[in-house]
Image (cartoon, rainbow, N blue to C red; front, top):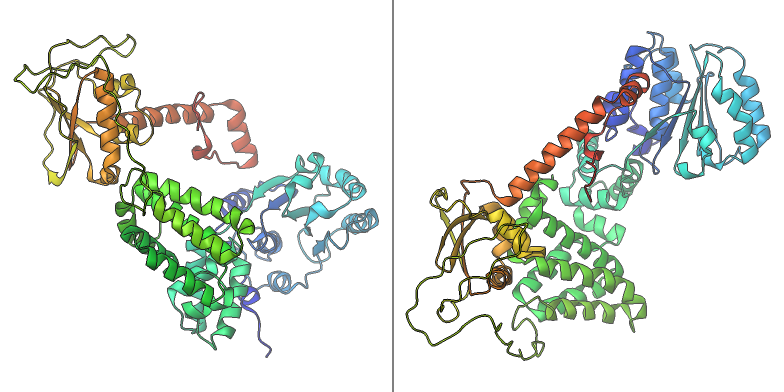
Length: 564
């Protein structure tokens, strides 16, 4: 028996085995179960995500000899013939090859007759956007009022080119690209059943190269098995794809962390020796920087535990500002490669930029730190000799009124730099604070922004004694104080707001009260819940859900006034 490629051998034959399109499966399953069948379906999405596969499964569900069902038997004559492409009442037409009005007229003429063997005649038109305008006009009347025995299934990779008159007559489903984790899991299952040994890193490279297409992933897997003589190994897959391995990218991060320019250039030399693409390297490095930054601010967004564990040390080691700068250098450096004398020169120059430019990190590069010019102190701040003076208690003015000037009593010399204690501490409620010490209002009144605001909002105010402000930061946000400049900027902003020196002490520990960030998130969630409830009670939305078996995607609901 001849070899059957993996993409055909492992094509899903039921909704249960379909991977990554749960939202479509759920809607079609409900429609088949309740008998609420539409006469025309439109499946959109990039190549290899399951448009034709779902079409065949739906055709089996409509014509299975056990009855209309979401779980066709797969063994009756109708099911087996549809799987093999021999069922007379299921027709797949490629609109790229049969795009004229005559082709459409011929199809519609045959559609008028009752099915020969099945319950329904199912016409699947692939790449329907390739039809001519006259062909679309020819099918409009039949699409609007089709015979009872006829079902249309349209598929396209470019729905923008389909006339709105056709779109309005179809029930549309957008098939999403496959997440890399789903592809890796599916390929692992297939290789296990095929008895082929593999390395998990190799499957991650294949999943990345597939760009969300499961069919492309299976084709690459076939190629990898042949390339590796029956084995799927990471090094062989990298050579096959010509991609930059993760080891090179993480070596770049290690060298940046150690500020080792020699190690950075050594990575570039190793890549040149293997004729790897420097453009691809910058693209992949920008992606890696994005994942590290995501690990800092939203670690829950990284589902892969292996990736999360690998990125955690880098998320703690690099400042958030540096990651943003490095990302900009990587993406702009990729655009500038064409202007460089050669790709190697352009790539190494970007590595030198990454080494040289670090936000407020003295000594990050050779001869890169310019002399600092002393800045004159604000005139309103009195700075006599260091003599004993009464402590000045800071009070936060109301948000809606201008900040009242603080008493001009003498203050000591400039306080020492901000101090961050990294030792875990036991949470102590800030019960001793005065009633007017509203930390949230203080942040708003001080006009904090950027990373300084992010740090302040995630802190809990513990105490204010004299000119020393004591804060506590949860361990989950300790990366915000990894770069001392964030704390210094917070201290400077508060000093400017109160018009006198303020020292900020931050320790790391579990908070006992609600931080401003938690308060804002609670307000946002409440507004979102109110917006969702309002939509769910809307008569039009209720009718849409009932008649079209639609689903309200709560994550897409945004309350009025939200900027994001």
